[in-house]
Amino acid sequence: MDLYEILRLEHRYRASIAVAIDRLAIAQGSITGLVGPNGSGKSTLLRILGFLEECTRGEIRFEGRAADPKDPSLRKKVTLLFQEPYLLKRSVFENVSYGLRARGETGRMRERVGEALKWVGLSPEKFAGRPWYALSGGEARRVALAARLVLKPRVLLLDEPTSGVDAPSVSLIKTASVRAREEWGATLIIATHDRFWLQAVADRTLTLVEGRLTCSGPGTFIHGPFELKSAEGPVKVLEGGTEIRLPAQPSGTSQAVLEAADMHIHPAPPESRPGQNVLECTLLHVALENDSAKLALGLSGGGLQWVAEMETAQFGRLCLSPGSRCWLAFEVSSLRWQ
Amino acid sequence: MNYLLQGFNNALELLFSGDPATVSAISTTVKVSSLSVAASIILGVPCGFLLGHCRFPFRSVVVTLVETLLAFPTVVIGLLVYALLSRHGPLGEWGLLFTLPGVAVGQTLLGLPIVIALTAAAVEGLDSRLAPTLLTLGAGRARLLWTTVHEARTALLAAGVTAYGRIVSEVGISMMVGGNIKWHTRTLTTAIALETGKGEFAQGIALGIVLLTIALAVNVSLSFLKRKSV
Image (cartoon, rainbow over all chains, first blue to last red; front, top):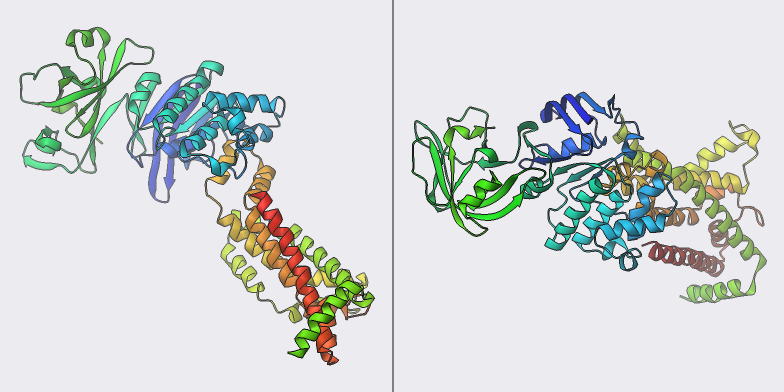
């Protein structure tokens, strides 16, 4: 069953379009990833889905009914963790229990707050009485996440939950977030630049560029400046001098996207042929994609991070492991301008 | 210089001897100014919240008006309230002229713009993430208001202290609306004006020191509260 259904949504800030989505459905209990460059509309879309902002035009259906963002009962089912969460000038306990008190759910409060703090790796004995100003950035982010998790929301919206925090906090935030689906079947929508994490946990990943959905699947963005070296099309010169050829650039576009499924990995340099780009890379990560027999591969080459996917059996035949040198090949025509 | 020394000695004497006229002026000052500050806060904080939080047509005009009222001369407020409360005035039948509630009405009008302007500035200066955070955690309108006020508590305490300072030190309203009636509406400031008029400078200085002592006690209590609330 679809929990959200978005129809002809458009949201504007003055004259500029922040988000424009013709149709989007989000299934109940699913994990949806949102990727895209900064300013692509991810945060705005999350605020609209969290009923904190009313869209300029279009319709949002929630649980099969047209949703009125002014209806406070909706915000009791959906909660959003902001990119830079705000903590009240109170103790950790009061911060985490705030939503429970707002909902009038005051029973077993100490126990529930303690449980939520444990989920994010904070000891209730050590942290519950601590004031807001005595927390590190990572601890504050985890307290803010605990304040959402304690509510056991039907929908948990996460806006770049792991940006700007240390590695242990990142790991705890990731585990605690996914727990929301495991424990009470919450629907998660995660906006992040950590595409590798999304590949591991998300049922699907949506790419937003300038407020519009461009591809449903992980992709790699190639930004300008581009050079026009021949009549065939523009060229992106990467670090180390490798050139990536692109198809002719339509006016009004500023970046090209390459979907993970369009990339091919070779353990040795492939034969070069016209219409194909080849780039030497280092394999950084390998992970099993969520609920599939595919592997998500993270590569580094020419100063960019590339996201590729491959069948498990096919990857086994390549005899590659993280740190291995390999070659990434893709058709010029597979690059799509946005 | 002798006046000052004499005044200081008299102040100690007045404070510790329990002079009935001084005790009455102190009691009247504390009662009427506390009532006025409480009324200013009760009425001013919600108005200041709305002014700082909401966006509505002509908001900037309202802000300018409130800020202009910060400089409202006390004698003009006294005059207006006197005109309203006098026997022939529109509120004459309430019988508030030359009473402490009448003085409190005037002093509330004096404190109100201070509380409204400083509350609006405090709410406007709050982190823009506060309201969406409260909403996404499920807060309704009343809880949103209360939590916002709570988050701005330090600034609101400063608004209360500023309003108290202006109210406790005013003469115009107390003199015009209260009438400086001994044992009844005489406050420390009107008593100082009277003693100075009589040429009793030392007595006037003594009452001034008493007034400052009260202000100090109030401010020390409030800064203790402020430290406790952080």
